Every structure is written in C-alpha cells, then in structure tokens.
Image (cartoon, rainbow, N blue to C red):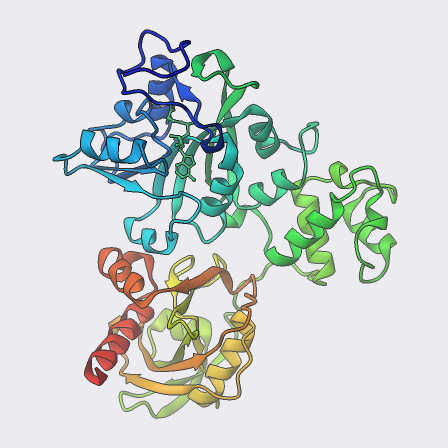
Length: 453
Ligand code: SAM
C-alpha cells in the first residue's frame, strides 16, 4: 500500500494506493516521537473518553488506542473512514464516526462530561473546526490541536505580539491558550509549505474576568480590528459619555489602536458600552422572599440569605422555552449565582419576590435572565417543596419563542437549544451537571409528556 508521494518515510504504515487530497488538508504525520508526544498532551491514560478529529491513516491514533476507556475517531474522508472502521472492528473501546467534524451536532456530547479532544487538524478547515468545537457552550474540557504555526501564534498572542488580533481576543475570552511546540514541514507527507505548531486549549475560569456581554464584546472587537491602522475612536460607535470618558476608564491615549489594548481592556470597553460601572456583585442576600408553610401558604417574609441558610420553605418558578423545532433552551448558570453556580438549568428560573405570583414571576424571569419578552406563560406542573427542589414549591411553566435569546451575563454564563432526547440522556448520564430543581422539573415534564402521548 503506497502513497503516490514517494517522499513517504520508512516508518509509515503500509496502505493501499492513496492520493492525499489537498482539499481535505491531508498532510500525514510521519514522526513517531511527535505523534506520541501530541497524544500525551491530552492526558489520555484512564480518561473516560478521548475524541480524535481527522485520524487519517492513524499516525496519532496508534498512540491513543487502549489508553482511554473509549476513543472516538471522526474522519470525513470516504476512503479513510471505512478503512479505520474495518481496522477497529471488534474493538468496543474504539468508535469511528464517518462525518464532517464541522457539522457534527455537539449538543448530544455534553452527556460525556468535559471532553478531551485531539487532532492534527486539516489546514483547509482548521479554523472552522476550532469555531465549531470551541464556541460556547462547548462540551470540550481540553483540546490539543496541531495547526499552521501562524494560526497558533494568533490564537496564543497577547497585545505585545505581532500576531495579536481579533482571533486572539475572541478565543481567549473563553479559553486559556498554551503554545506547546513548533513542528517543521519535513515531518509530513506531503510536505506543507509552512511550519505547524501544537497548542492546548482549556476553558477559562469565568471568575478570572469581570462579567460582560459576549455578543457586544465580539461586535466591538471585530469593528476595532476591521482596519488595524486606524485609531480606535474612528472605528467604534459613539461611546456613552463620549470618547474621553472611555479613554479615561482605560488609562490610554486618545490615539490608541485596537492592537494596543489587552483582553482586560477590551472587556472594560464592552462594559463601558453596557454602562456597567459597578463591580460584579452577584445576588443580593438582602432581597426579600415570601416564606411559606407545608401547604404553600405565605407565613412571613425573610431575606434571601436567611431563607437559604436556614432552609426555609419558599417559592420558585422554572420556565422551559420551546422553539418551533421542539428544542428547549437550557442556560448554564453564572458563576456569580449563590446556589448551583455553573450548573445547567431551565431556560429561566428564579424565586418569587415578596408578594409576587408565579405567573408574573415567570414573565419577569424570562425577560431578566434571557431577554425573552412574552405576555404570558403556560403552567404545566406544580411540584411540592422537598430536598429535590432545594426547599422550594415550584411551578413549571412553558413559553414558545423562536427569536433571539439575550442572556444577562451576571445571571447566565451561556446557553443553547437542545433536543429533548439529548437532554434526557445527559440528565441520566450526568445529573451532577444540573441544578437540582431542574432535574426535578425535567422528570415532571417527561412524566407529563408521556401521559399525554
Ligand atoms: N491524524 C492524521 C495524521 O496526523 O497524520 C491525519 C492528519 S491530516 C492533517 C487531517 C485529517 O483530517 C485527514 O485525515 C482528513 O481526511 C481529515 N479531515 C479533513 N477535513 C475533515 C473534516 N471536516 N472532518 C473530519 N476530518 C476531516
């Protein structure tokens, strides 16, 4: 089995006649030491699952097989994928998916927990693969990728580096990027024209940055870097309070350019446009709630802090927002939440304010947390207070919505639309990823859906 390219090294595995396709970014790694080293960087030993993107002829794969409990290989090429399938037939710890890694539905992958992914990515669609797998919400917990060195430089650059630009900021706001190693063209067949490099990406601790509107941040960064040579003041929209007040906040000169500002300063810009001038406070322990008895009758009012500390019975509403495809919007709670920070939850959920009814709380929470404005919601279940609801008498409501969702960053870290089947398998596999109240609501919702069938 031979490549048409006769530069193939002695160590390459025997293959039937195969012509590497440029359009598929097929540059096959020939160096055993580098292949082994890349595999090690994703720490596969004993991991529940490792995913390799673009296994090709298996240069990295052979150093991964047998190390994690399960290895999933995603290969688009119609000749290579079936070959891999037959190579690993009969091995229950290896699965080959013949598919395009830029099109795979990632919502069904959350059930595996934070994924370790690795790949010598095809140059042709490397950026698309990064965007698909790393745009929040992402199921990835650690990614080790080989890409063109120039792209890795841009991903890892800070404001001191020539490669610094919009891509650096758009990725680094969510990911820690480490440049691990540069790899010369000679170790591939066919030989690419440029150096490659290996990077590792791990999710950024959300508490390491102040909260900011991510959609606005992306828009401002793209505008700011649209013409690198221009001063920022000529590229960004009119700043609230005028350009001088923004410059003062940043502590830079009025002539500053996009590339002269760090990630933290870009976040300050987004916060300035949002007119967010206070430090992140989280939820106020002084907020007043109605405290109820075992029959859900209001008996007194107490502060949020006291209600939670003493485990007093109180009231909360959960809302499932459903779109016309039948998908449900789930939010990941902000790290600033006092209960279940960073857990996945209903589209919106919250306590009833003192004197407030469930129906009006549902409408208010939807507007406040995810920017969805509806006239009314529909009651689908009443759930008694217990340990499974964190001492809350819960009403579960639904709302129909197909428009955009705009998450308030101090309330919601991220969110997305999920197929109900994907939610069910995820809840069954990893209930620890969810707020307790959501799991209870999900069970109530499923029971109701089953009864109505
Ligand atoms: N891992 C092998 C190695 O290191 O020698 C192959 C790496 S090669 C640079 C990229 C691989 O990605 C090829 O096998 C190619 O067929 C595959 N590929 C290209 N586009 C893809 C896509 N959209 N989804 C999945 N695999 C893809």
